[in-house]
Length: 487
View 1 (cartoon, rainbow, N blue to C red):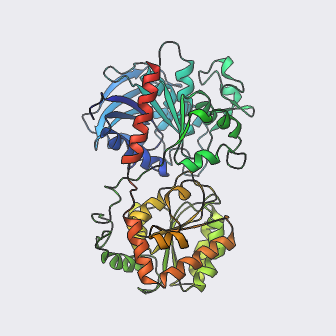
View 2: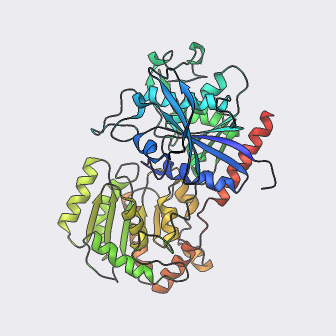
View 3: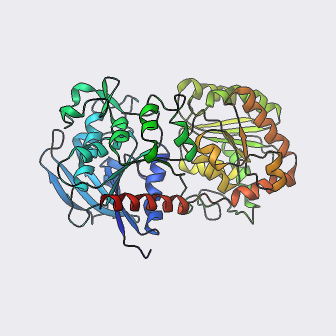
């Protein structure tokens, strides 16, 4: 805190608790507060979705008027909400819509997503250039493809601009749009090439960010290594390998005020690492909520996930018979691919009292699953970091995870050596296959039948540091190095 305060602009498309489809929102909402302790003042630029505008207080002010921003007037609003410094881009023609941030109620992507998120990036670049008096950032931090053009606009702009860092939360989502939009998006002709924004004959928003940013980060060290390989690079491994000297893996954390079993308002009974008796009450409430048999001795596996191939939910669906064969129960919270949603619903109907589902996502139910389940299943085929296993550690729901990305970096497998040294915090399995997942479920069931061993692992898990202090320090050091290089 003795060092001079550094100013950072964060450019994001989601922000907890107002707009969330995944972990990006949680990270964007928690990181600014953690950085304040490191002497970094972060403000967040986000689109003016209806939920964001509704959250703004009357004290919010317009700090800039755009006569035309991709076809119509717009305003940039500034406010502080729940301790977060915000810039909200009020552009009704782009953001005043029902549905998710990216798609309408019918699930179809908005046809003008290129313009919607180019507008966000363009305003981010302009704030970087001094658009707002009193806040000229030393660094601009862009997140995922929706903000991917921000580093490109900064690098291609005339005049001095701050350096930028591009964070990849999930390389699978890349934001590709027709090449014919180049001029409409304000990108110069010379930017359309392999050393620019061109990506397999299209404009790649994420590719642009990875190409033009001064630094690249991902949300775990293992994922940073994986995306530099053909198997994990999703077609961008060549670029990432070439830029490996500026690529950093920084683990995510979770907001320990939001995820705190000792004070969680969503739990029927609080508990902590040293006083875990309240977990039994939470388990009974979880079983009641999911229609499971009330059996305190049954091993309850929980799931809080998108029901997709990436998350390995097809493997879990196939593993349900093996799970039930261990005498266990399963509580699934999530939404996603119709075939998987239907498959879990059918499993619940076929085995009442043993399998229960809550289709969709509700924050309160997610907290109940973490607080009441004995173990949490995360069989992802690839996982940049994962937040659900961090919450599980904090709440004592032992994570059973695939050995990939951030899952491998955050869970210590209960193998013989780890058990002997009393450092295990969960279970890992590899390869990502049905037999390996079934074996991991069997290992968990075997540990469950050894209460003293299970409780020791649970205590280890709940004492893990899963907060933002360490990651915030790493980001602050990165920002300072970038600012120093820029002079």
